[in-house]
View 1 (cartoon, rainbow, N blue to C red):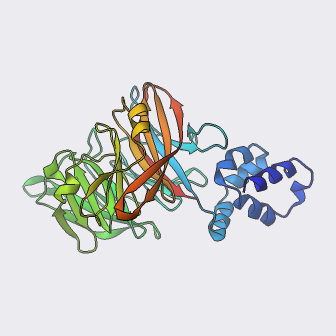
View 2: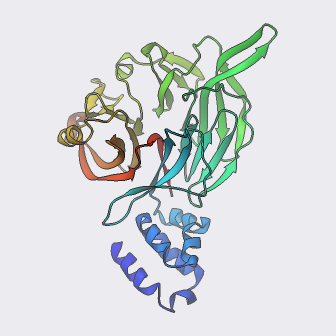
Length: 364
């Protein structure tokens, strides 16, 4: 594929390329790895427009060339402002996180989730979608129920079968005053409409009590800051239950799920941990990363992981006054052992005022 890119760049400045049919140009560029797109966008205005076009990404989908593209929401600790950033995965040089100027600031208290090539953002009173092919923003219909405002995130969004399940605290007004309840709202991303009715749970503790949430084996797992707050919601049965004691025993935060296995970076234990519900042992440590994690993440107070490819994981973590990105490939071996291999590690942004709120990966 890199040879195709080299040949294409050799042709692109020549007078022949403007006379190529547009469909042929799209077909060629669609086959080029997405990591080359920042370079291609510098060729001309025509190519900058092509790189942002829906036609190109539709062709990539038809050709089976879709890849993971990683984004992050960074918060400025001085201003409190959240900015949407893209991870530029460059060839033969360092990866970098770059602020996307066309996307306005977002609330770091919001909830963020990826569906296909879009990222959905749910703030306290409104919701929007970000098209990650063109980096444009569209408002979503008004949420049928507002959530409570909180200095830290108190709602989470997860995706099951193309539908976003948004769970958090909301306020109901009745004849005796105000009642705070747990609310589940469902957004159909195909029709861009909210499904009714809204499901409400009255007999649950309210407040900003969740530290993270993931979708695992068709259910939504919500980890509490305290173990007693950890719950599981089954959308199919519309049923709430307590979280399994083994899964609840670890303080997983900034986690992700790959092939129905939950991964998170344990900052205190300096280990990448995995929870496989199919294994009786529950939690395990991903082997092969001990030396790297001990050397590089010693001072990390937070971390985030996200799927960044088939059996690949991206780990973001702070180091002194920078944010680092490590790409790790995963291998499941006989007996359920999981091994990790460090593919790369780069400083992706240098600013002591920035910390990470959330990272998401879309398919483009």
